[in-house]
Length: 359
Ligand SMILES: Cc1cc2nc3c(=O)[nH]c(=O)nc-3n(C[C@H](O)[C@H](O)[C@H](O)COP(=O)(O)OP(=O)(O)OC[C@H]3O[C@@H](n4cnc5c(N)ncnc54)[C@H](O)[C@@H]3O)c2cc1C
Image (cartoon, rainbow, N blue to C red; front, side):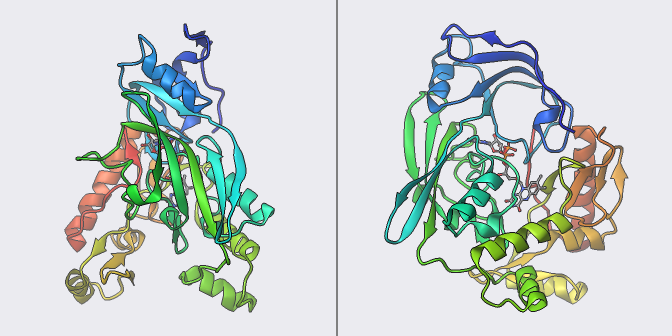
């Protein structure tokens, strides 16, 4: 799926930025969907964002921020100026009595950060192993897996405002995190969707380290192996193995991971659904609500393996839509997703929300 992208770049007057025209985005999205970017600028440092904002041609144009493209569905060519985040850098910023603070540039791969932190002896991120995409995008949807969410470990993020070019450091407390949600995804009052670029992220790995093991598949691993006090490295290896067995590798078959969020319902709604579908998989949440397994609902509606053109429901996990022949188009993915939403609504009365950003 990895193709060579891009046409010859032009140098912008600032002589610092590279502007590329008519860039093929197929290699830059994990679904492998075809789309062109009229203009693309690679962001190598926070100051590059300011240079774009100050630029006479680009400054006022709409912008789209692109990380690793593993949580987007491209349905058309992009007219907005694409800012492709490639800011490097990964270091232990500070060792405190209560935590290790790790700082990374927005362009660093998230999975690389987690592996590096384990190898360096800063445990705490192991449950989030192998999640694709960049560090800069991780706070946007508050990535989560195997009982841990980014918000449990985030210290702060650096952002640059896309209107003013001003930089700011936001502590985790103002990021308004929710399930696959944050201020960076919210567009209402105070929301920052489309308004700022995350340039650096600081993660807090608390001391003393405590394993996060409540998740069913990790409990199964403990039973299977007889290891009841796993190290961070052991949990990292288990999560990596579970993910490899369950999720399609985007390098082999295009996808954007879970396509729908697991719906959260009240106990009354859950009882009502259980009355009709006793087998429905659900998890109690700390606030008394219940999370329903969207993949189970999609499977119960008979979608596993079904396709619209090149877009299909993954055979092994109904929550994942895939580009089965490498030729899928964004419109096919959206048509399939809408049909799934309709049928789940028809049977369970629940509207599934999509997890990736549809463009
Ligand atoms: C196989 C697979 C498995 C996955 N598993 C999980 C999982 O377990 N848990 C989970 O939570 N997610 C999962 N995902 C989804 C995805 O990996 C995450 O959402 C990831 O954080 C997206 O990163 P990205 O760099 O690819 O973002 P993109 O897809 O490039 O962008 C996603 C959104 O973030 C915005 N954005 C990107 N970078 C920045 C930035 N620096 N500043 C501001 N906005 C930005 C974009 O504008 C866009 O709106 C999975 C995806 C795949 C393909």
